[in-house]
Length: 337
Image 1 (cartoon, helix red, strand yellow):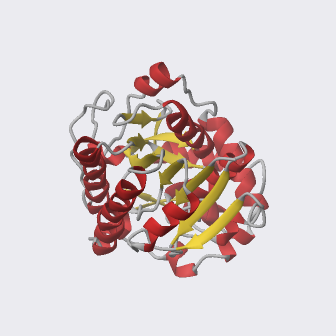
Image 2 (cartoon, rainbow, N blue to C red; image 1 turned 45 degrees about the vertical axis):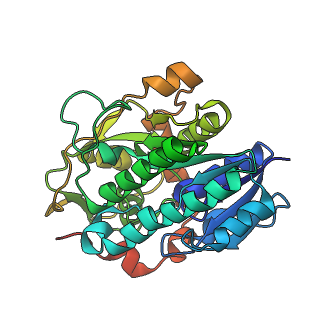
């Protein structure tokens, strides 16, 4: 049975990826330093599986290298990262430490390990490294122009990985994905935040005029793409992963409201509330994902209408998920600048 390491596996995408890997009969080692966005609720379905092991560790810790030599993974999926733009505006330091210094240590550890062991590193990044895409869609050769400290830290980590591929022949691949949504996402992000407010009869805060556009992909489609990259991807390449479907924040909110009405009666306070925009807020992200479609044969399976229904169903059935989180992490406004 092949062993896989997932860093950041207590988080949103990481826990969904682990679930899929276990279904495909891999043995998964989850390495997570357990921060505010980590949640053991996310792994409760498979926490006692004989094919799953959790290790609490920061990827900045040099013990990470010992774990590599002990378990000899066929692949490392690196999802350990600080990801919330608003938090990066308030406190960039943790983003520099996790997303740059942490990745540097991971690369050094993997460099030593991969000299003697056959393995791959899949570094998961974001479409935000490309910055505002006001027209068209950004391809893999598109210049990086990050706007926030978060996006800049991820851009730096992508460049680090790429440099290690070229200089040290490191067997690594970088993926850049669009906005994910789905089960197990922390409510600092738009969709689970809105769902929480709908469930608790609160106003729905939307930045600016709600016109900021994002390309939305259902998390399980993203995870399928990551496994496809591991199995068929070419070392040293970058792969964009997206749905090719853009919606602005106002459209997303209205779709959520429409679908929520089939599950509950909405409270009288559940109304759209436009709030002051965050500093440096990009207008539009949009990826060109033709490369992964043509080269690896991957395509997203879940349209937004279906995905949002699946997402709502999960949160409505797992209301205790929100109880496992700090109230201030759900309610407090961050990133005012």
